[in-house]
Image (cartoon, rainbow, N blue to C red):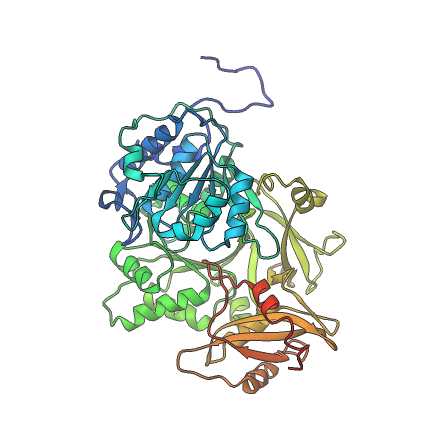
Length: 557
């Protein structure tokens, strides 16, 4: 044993007892709450019945078995990549923790991506192992074949084992439950999460163990509001945890407090409502306000059969919430429920935070038309800058890009030095989110920089127009894009999905908007459609809409 008690700088923790490793989450809780449930998979979110509900001891031992099985392969070495093509399941989640235990790197791929993109990501990551859900194999089979990759382990959610692979159960059957003896540093990269790739090929966001710990702890402070003891935290999500940055903030806080994580296979309003009621959930990651409303409808229509009174905190993002929905949520839960809107991204998930109850007058006067995102949390230094990089601090109502400094910021884009240098120009991470300051210094989300519309020389926030559209009683969903136009350069164009049974008239919708928006903001046209292209998290893929409708005005519409 060699312990350095002389150096005061350039130190790296190499000891098992004081290291920072995501793989140690569960093992450390076995010394306090070994028999408490760590993870619970709701129906469909596990392949084997014995893995439906795992205590901290059971979860840690299973993760050790997975890690030791991986390390037992002769071709595996520290830092090698492990590919996931999986939706939420207890087996996939345990395997991610096992990857961290083994000193390897998790590289999950979004199952919604196109085959050519999947093939590109396989080539870039060069995985030594792959875990694949049998249910999702048809979506990646072509890309795997193109790159000569065979699935190593099947997670048989539907009961099938893919050709050339072994089942998850067989993979871990003879593996040791002992803790792997691996050197791990807090600044080692343990996960590469790919961006949505809405404007180009996805970029690989490098996530360190330190990033994950600090992200998890920063959210644990907010998600335990209203609880007498932080270990009472019981989180629920039916949104992606395997291939999405939500794993950092909507699962890890449960383990950093000694709480419990409950998750479903994928988004399901009925399943979420039932899980909240069955599991006495305290923290509900709702996704978007539209998703919160869908689940709220289920509770209200249950006639009291479903109970949400255990919920003490609700988190949402992407757009402002309607005060009417806030009141409905309070009736379902409690008057003291903590509602929190966040703004962050894969590269920097420390997040802006806006509590309607902290700024009640601002919320009442502006929601939902103006999307307040509040202030950076204490781990996040952030300012707004103009196109030349000049600070807009002290300037009210002028849009600028939010830039960040924080220990919860990506180490870079994997194998993409040019994109990394561009993102960190000037010594700050450039988010691509356009915000503005109000008179009190609170930030207002204006738009993503790539979604801002320049119409007739004026900047138009698509988020603002979409909020007005969604307030129309006949509109369920709305997306606003700028389409090429001879006169306006970009014409503000609304693409809407009607509420069930409704047939909104485009001219009436345009008139509705003109009564509530400035002339330059109001849609020049309204297109009615059955659905919008969305990510699994509910974000609209606007680039697809811009491509699909590029010739709308050229054709004389």
